[in-house]
Amino acid sequence: MNCNIFLDRKLHYISYAAVYLAGFLSAKAGLNYLAAVLLAAEALFLFILNFRETKNLVDFRGLFTLAWVGGEGIACMKLSRLQSEWETMTWLAFFLIYFCFNLGYDFWISRTSGKENEELKRSESQAAKVLMCIMLLAAASVGCFLLEAAVVGYIPLFDSAPHAYSYFHVSGVHYFTISCILIPALSVLYVRLVPQLRKKSIVALAIGNSIAAAIPILCVSRFQLLFAVGFAAVTYLMLYKKITWKMIVGLIVVMVPLYVMLTVARRHDVKYLNGIFEMKNSKMPIFITQPYIYIANNFENFNCMVQQLTEHTMGLKMLFPVFALTGLKFVFPQLTSFPLYRTKEELTTVTMFYDAYYDFGIFGIIVFSLVLGLAAAALLRWTFRNRNPVTYLFYGQAAIYLGLSFFTTWFSNPTTWFWFGMTLVMYWFIGYQGKRKK
Image 1: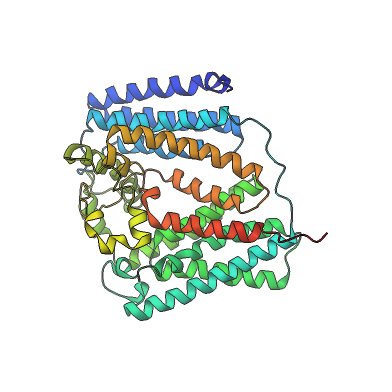
Image 2: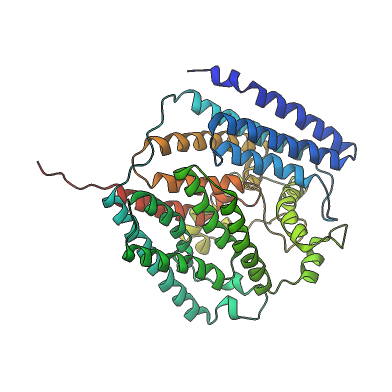
């Protein structure tokens, strides 16, 4: 095994350990802003180092660094009354998460050397199958959405009840309803595979992407809309490796009004949100407080669990996708009826590593982080060495999950595995060549 990669990255490990210790001591001394600056600056420093090595803006390690270490820095500011001083065990867990992820990542990279494949080649036959997948996903999403609307009796966007979006689902069917969020990324892949777009293809793509935008808006789901856009953006950067300021500004101009509109449609006014967030500075604008809480409070919920958890669940928490997708949660509800430790009832999001600690404590954190690092590096290698273009869709989804590792337990979420499953079906369909004639 080639161990040079560990030596080459010693600057990353030493820098992270030193700055993290300084941040920990600063926070314990009550210097929250100093701790926040140290960790946020370290996240940016490590991201820049990683980008200089990989030349990839959406590299797994770089995204995870910004999300996890940077997220800790933001949380350390303690701008909300809901936040408290973290337990020493919480600090240790957060440190080991990033450290062990990198150990697993570097271990896999060190044992799998070799050059990457050339850039994705254009293929009319594969492009035709991609377009077929787009239209099938669009049709399935529309059909299932209409079925859910008929069964539930309303459409969230036009319903005045608070949290109407939370109850808009039919078990099993809703997975297909929201599968339309895969369409924008598939569209990027299609455009990359064809030498020139035809009028029929343009019409088909316009219909598919309109559906991919309309259903999240009708469901009043900000996450689904942001995921669809983010997934497409990652796929674009992987395939074209370029981005301009005009693209960034254009994306912001379109997405910010949509995000605000969906927030209003959820019947969440400023007074309601400020009441939940309990910011120390009540005059702070909502466009700052909302993203701040959506990042910072997840780390606080982890700390609440460390403080209040009385016994570990020995793997049952992380097996929720199995219980959900097989229907066992309805037969044996006790398998999934575990309390969620959080700072406030309305703020339910947690970090990706919440369930790992819930199940096995600090041992679960170490093992899960190592495995996650190994899996990320393995997927990276596989993506660039496989000739099937759908591998970029696997990469794009994983990149989103790592880039939002502070937000929720993606890998304990059945929807994650359903989307991966659908991508696997498309991988087989698009890559299948059939029997060759002699």
